Image 1 (cartoon, one colour):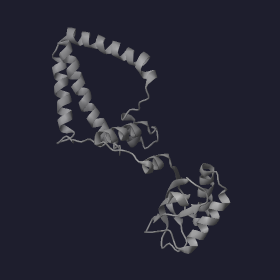
Image 2 (cartoon, rainbow, N blue to C red):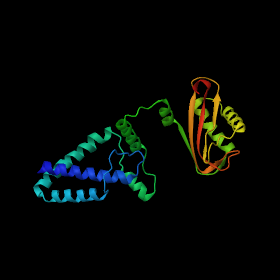
Image 3 (cartoon, helix red, strand yellow):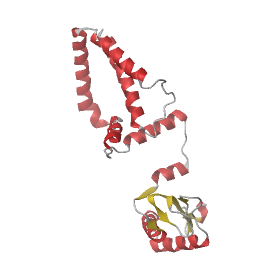
Image 4 (cartoon, rainbow, N blue to C red):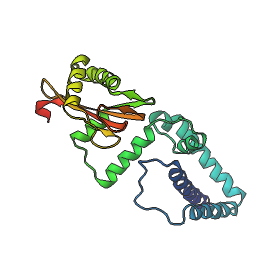
Length: 230
């Protein structure tokens, strides 16, 4: 009976996990199967398993509680210090409280699970995007100010003077507007040297004013590289 109780607790945990993961609204949570009639089936299952556990009797519950106590102590004192994990429940709490209280550990973990499940092989571009710098602007800014900030960040990564980048970006923008479609721009320049390439990802909630662009740009991909990396 104690073993059966442990299995029932496992089933309860599995159903709770489904509810927590679905309600966390994590982008990288991409299950291959979605349970129909969610969350009613999970809630009914949890209540049913709970009733069966209650019906087992006090002795069985006591033995189960002892097992769980030892398992919890083992986790707290042995397993927890050796691993880095993040609870999906924190994302549910974050949605309710509208506060940033979590990091990207769980998102990265889910991304790796999806990659393994779908047998996705990362290429050089995938690694480049993963390691790229991301800028987030909350205020509306002009192209000149944006280029100064972007050039400074890129100069630190590529070990090139930011003034050279600013000059090249301005010259490129004068040739033709790099705002390819409403809300999106892809400024790109070629620099001297070999084996250099970088991407800067930018999000601007209020927009960036590009010369000759009909409206503010909100998403920018800045590309910079040497001739041999084209």
